[in-house]
Image 1: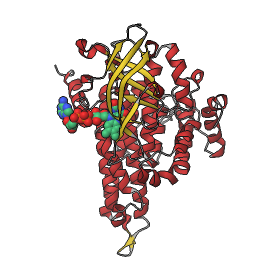
Image 2: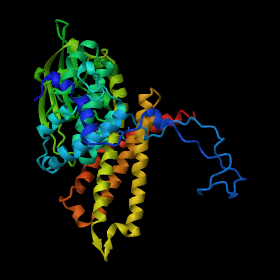
Image 3: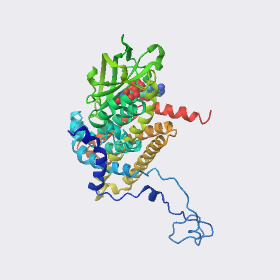
Image 4: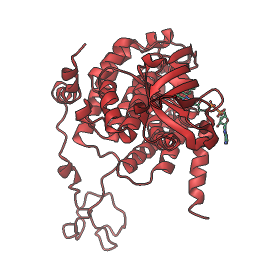
Length: 454
Ligand SMILES: Cc1cc2nc3c(=O)[nH]c(=O)nc-3n(C[C@H](O)[C@H](O)[C@H](O)COP(=O)(O)OP(=O)(O)OC[C@H]3O[C@@H](n4cnc5c(N)ncnc54)[C@H](O)[C@@H]3O)c2cc1C
């Protein structure tokens, strides 16, 4: 294992190494990319006499039209984001890829992969360099989650929950002391879990029943209760737990606590699942767990607000997982159809197939643009909640459709476990369930759209 000081440099090194090792094409500077060529002026008096012309003939006034300062497309990334995408893509294919089948069969996360994610700097993407993180953008986290999901949605959700829920909660709401004690470990060697749901409170998350009572000394809270379906919890060492300090106040008693596993977090049961099997999902119990009051994250009684805000952002991460999944299934299946021959030609060359590819790819593209748009709106501090809900809702539908179609395109072999297409389909179902079911996303979108009318 690398030393702490070596690890703190890893993310930056990973990017630098990716630049040279992958011999990437030079990425144009942002300024160069923004230098948009003049848009040709087309008028009824052009030589063709057409308003819209794709002709190579130079049009009148072409050189006199002033440049328009147009915002960049949603496919505009910083140099670091582009480098990160290349390095995560390579990592996913070369390091994760060979282990996907075995991890899914064993329903276990390979510890070497978890360590490799830390070594690559992928577990503290937005965390500041002061806290041993990579200090990159939210979009960088979205890109990493997307690229990992192309190869394995289980690894992807592990990285997603750790970054967009656990790290973000501490980064955005933890005081300096909490950040100093937890963020460096989360960036270098300790996996995190976000513990909100309970057996009786899923969609209705704030009906949670876990309690946190101040002890007689007034220095510690005593936690009692249980949490259900908690991602990463079998391997995690740090747990963000939402508990109610005063149930008489309803949701206004909900408070967020940062716990070390050693404080007494017990894994009561590991769930067996339909998909994302390598990602652990456990039932946790808290039996008189003593938590120092210094471990409160944010303000006492404001945990409900933290959960709402963080899940609004987190949904963009799940959308990214779903578009990565959809693209991974699509790429694998379509490549196969150009190899497989029936009736004397590649099956991908039948129009009945090719039109389906075009249709599904259009949906994936639309889902990706919704996701990138929500991510950039969030980064720019603009309203993004409706867009994030749309992205998650749509991307999870697209993932189910794309992975289902991918199985059909590969025929019998797609239905077997041989090529891994059925795994994408099994993994896709969860997108419509966690971090707010599809109905909850629709409810959010509906509530916000009504404001435009009433
Ligand atoms: C694999 C996995 C990983 C998870 N990871 C985590 C985690 O890390 N941390 C965490 O805290 N939680 C986690 N969860 C929990 C997850 O967020 C919940 O399962 C989810 O919020 C739905 O809650 P529920 O399962 O209780 O379903 P319910 O709330 O019982 O919903 C069941 C159905 O009823 C519908 N429904 C409910 N209320 C309404 C309504 N008002 N209007 C219309 N329809 C409604 C839902 O849309 C759904 O179709 C995970 C779950 C799974 C399966």
